Amino acid sequence: MQQPSINKELGQEQGRKIKLMPKATLRAKRSDLLPIVCSMLRKAEQRPIGRLETKQGDVKTVPHILHPAGFPLPHVEDSRKRIRVYFGGVCVIDTTKAKLVWLNNHHPVYAFTREDLPSWYLSIASETPKEIQFIVKLGPQPERFPAITFHLAGPLIGLGFIKFEAVDAWFEEEEQIYVHPRDPYKRIDVLQSSRHVRIEINGVEIANTRCPLLLFETGEPMRIYIPRTHTRMDLWHPSSRTIASPYKGTAELYNVVLSSGETFEDIMWSYPSTTLECVTVKGMVAFFDERVDVWLDEEKQERPNDPSGPATPGPSHPPEVFKPGNDLLILQKP
Image 1 (cartoon, rainbow, N blue to C red):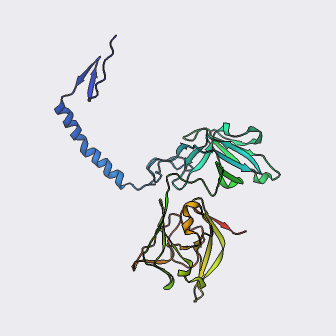
Image 2 (image 1 turned 135 degrees about the horizontal axis):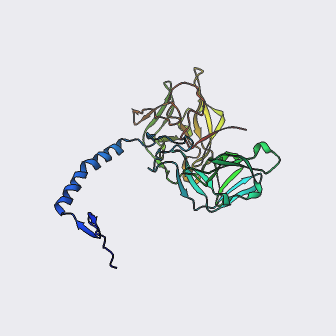
Image 3 (image 1 turned 135 degrees about the vertical axis):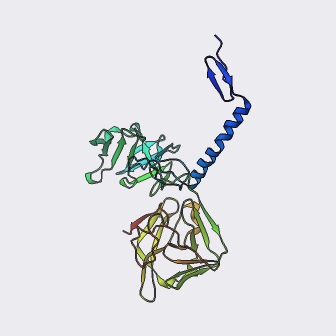
């Protein structure tokens, strides 16, 4: 029996025949859609990335929020890298089928299927209709056993998650990674500049240079790196903390103590060593622009809004409030 052909123009099927719509009617219907489409586009442009929609869902996975790349969360992608996880000196996960998952719009995490985990290390700790939690029994310290949570329902069904800091080391191929997996949708550019930069704290000039390096990172404020000799090195003192970034490396934090005695804790940082992509900022210093006054080519800059906290100018703040990007983890020196 002859099958009816599918007409690629807009039409209506009646029985086994396709009744074509007159071209004039087709043009009219298309033109009727234009105001609706334009209205939808205007609303989309006005909607900020990361806005919570009216629908409500599981707070842990923060659904209906957009990643800066534009996809809704949670979002799951296949990873083509070999991923290994070490705990107690033993490789407890070794897979080429890991998933890269965005639970929030800050950074991704790795997730695994049940087949990725050797059963002889696992013991069930708890179980609900929505998830089952295993612990990795390995080593003499039960209080350190990491937990792996598998989702039994929802958009993450069949995936297991382990906290990055709960294990000893993570490897992508033969490269160890730190803090969290890097976001493939983020980019860092470090550019040499000749712009005149001046930085003040409470009216005291602490840096002045015409050869800064400007670091541009997706979704973060521009950061200004300055040669040490172009700053008031007599005013800084080492902090007891460091910061770690998967994109840049581990940096030393510094306090600034003015002659008035005011102390500004953890207000600047410097990377004694860096990753290859940011090697040019090695040894230079940068300030939290959220807490200092910055002039670029004699024009005073507005203080950026730090997504991790308010940009207030007080002399002393918890370092957790002021971080150069949400990708950074602040650590206490041993």
